[in-house]
Length: 130
Image 1 (cartoon, rainbow, N blue to C red):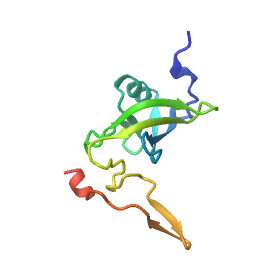
Image 2: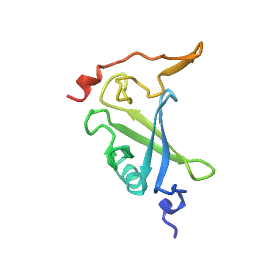
Image 3: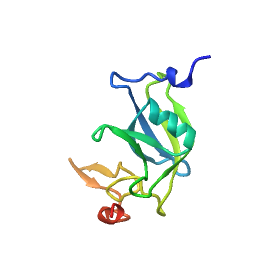
Image 4: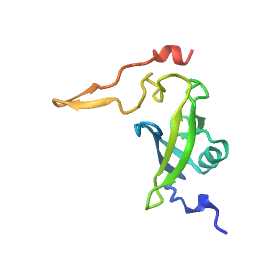
C-alpha cells in the first residue's frame, strides 16, 4: 500500500504550496508551505502545521499568536502539487489569519493602479505577539 504522502508532488525543496480556506465563508485566508512532516502532523492533529521557509522550521499556526486553525478537510488538486485546507480560524472573533491582524492575508486590492487595504485591522499586530 502506498503512503498517502508519497502521492504528493513535492518541489525540489521538499515543499508543497498550501491554501487555507475558511469553512463557513469560503474566504481564502492564507497561502503557506508544508513539508512532509508538516502535512503529516496537520492530518494527525487536526490543526494546521506549516513549514516556515524564512525560519527553516515547522510552524504550528497559532503557537505564538493563539490564532490556531482547526482543519476540517485536506484536499489535493488534480496535479497533486497543491494542498487545500478547509479550516476554522480560531483565537479571535472574527478569526485572524494574517500576522497584520487582519482576517485574511489577501487584504490588498488593486484599485486605480495602486494596492490598497480592503480589510480592516481587527487587532493590533503588536498586541497579538506580546
